[in-house]
Image (tube, rainbow, N blue to C red):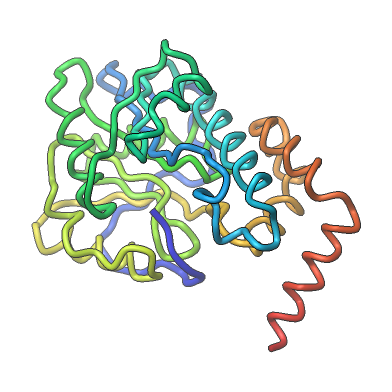
Length: 270
């Protein structure tokens, strides 16, 4: 649900959720009901995930990183006590995902179409459940995500129709809804830095109210890799995303990390 390197912008009347971490507890809303959390994920297969991190990372390393991110994200979502489902793609990867995550987890296919089609389908499938007042859809590649951020998102839905977590690349790492609104996912320029801006425009056109969370960085590019790894200790991300940290620590020894920094510096000068 992300794109390139641009500060998000959009309608001026969007509400801002509570900054930073907010609550330290789960994602339970003020009504006492919990949302259902849908983790959008691609089955971590070498050569098919995190392709923007290659060729700096080998295909197997990128897949290992994707798996670690997914596992850590699931731990955070499930740690809130909310029902958590994995919306996965491709369909042929179900058995591989069951072997990876276990059969106890609820898996639902994203289905065909672009990301907007799949978001509309999954949210439409989950929202009719009266046991949950809302659905929070998150990616599996945003190490800034926390239980407190999920709680903040669900609280924001008490006063808004839609909540978005802006990504620093112009996309978003979270979308929350309490009713079906497939139109906000239609005709969006996915995989560009205009995803958030276009989505906010759709929301405004429909007369829906919007709350925004604090921006965060997805882990999609070599620049993201460098920034996350460099800041992991300072921001306590090592404890929150332990598997991701271990994988990065293994594949980025000091010399390789220095090579990454040098390559990014050279690219910035070009």
